[in-house]
Length: 565
Image 1 (tube, rainbow, N blue to C red):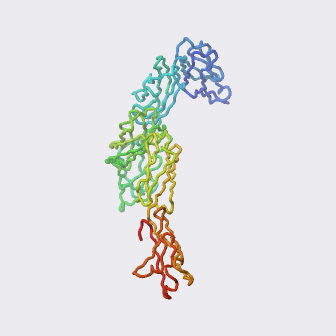
Image 2 (image 1 turned 60 degrees about the vertical axis):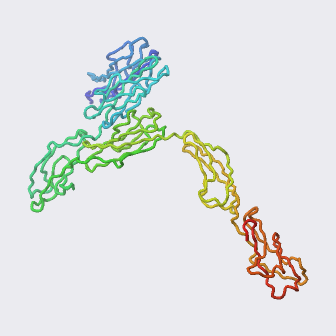
């Protein structure tokens, strides 16, 4: 049979509620819940309003729901209720819980939550954002936020314009793990005010080294000691260590290596690992490192770029320092330049992120001073964060298409034309130049698609049409390497013996061909034959019987009007 040995326990505390003054009878306010570990009637929980405004509030016997008995209009704005939860045992056991109720009217600012909760590590540096309180003003004006019940020792503060609650002091989980704050929002126009409770839980970090009860231990062991013999028990405490989490131990030699003669057991006892030999080895004490080195950053200075419209938590950059002392744990902080809490640095990794996007102004860059500390020594390094224009506009070309005339013999690197595209985010763009020799005969017209692209914007295309003008850079060529002709006996002077044909890849006057008979020595060949300079027809100038049997035909040359021979 179960004994009634457990009291009801309230869960989800503390209880806070906000009720509008226009709420009617029966309107829900909040609900309290308690549990009882006993069985049967001993574990059946009932609720009752023990103290505070029983004429205004009612508590359901079975569910714990708190409701209104009548309208709160015209009454106080804050109420403290004490609700009791009791079980069905004989005699019954009970527990109490406090319920805070605040009433607001239509002219008062209203927070998005009746109670804010937040967690922050005890290692958080000053001005680290904890949470953002959000409230709306009926007048649509801006609000002023402030702490109505300042934190003990000014550990927290709130930005009066943004509602960002941030760390203002050095937190210590071991000294105080929880803070109960009250923040108000005041309408700048009407002056009406509303307050909201804020609970900040400080989380523990491993910032306390284990402490031995004594700084030096002396022990004598016989070389006859057998392995497993416990020689000494040490007592160690750690303010960060939970009671159910054991500490780990390590026995070191003088050179820092792990001892093979002794080891530490889980209960803190120094025990023998292997057989001892006085003549061969005397055990030496472990050497503890002394913090005698200053941390050094990997760079003399840091610089990075960030869009002018960043998002909260966006990565900015990472700083890195090292310390020759192997046991030192470096801690990074933003020492200067972060008055508006724009940036947050992870104190262990050195990763810097965006913390408060509302506080960015028109400054083109921010200068921060970063420090790395090992507990005794610290060093600084400057960080420049340059804001880059956000890509809010797509570029546009001045023209849909461009046409350019260019000589084919221009040198590589010669500017061809300038295409103008304008982007309000980046300014004018674009100069086109040649990269190699051009050849009109291979490609007389070049069509170049030109595009502009911007991050997150669609690119635009324009076309540049380049017409290459001809230069006289090609020699004429005969269609055949050699021509043969037979002079018939019945031909007469003035008849055409044969016709030669040549071509030129240039155009216009540069391709106009003139034919002539080429002679290396003076002879009478022109008395026998001649050539039409335009058609290339070779004409007989004498009767065939006058040529002779050993007649050798002449060589024919072609020339261009502007090139000469």
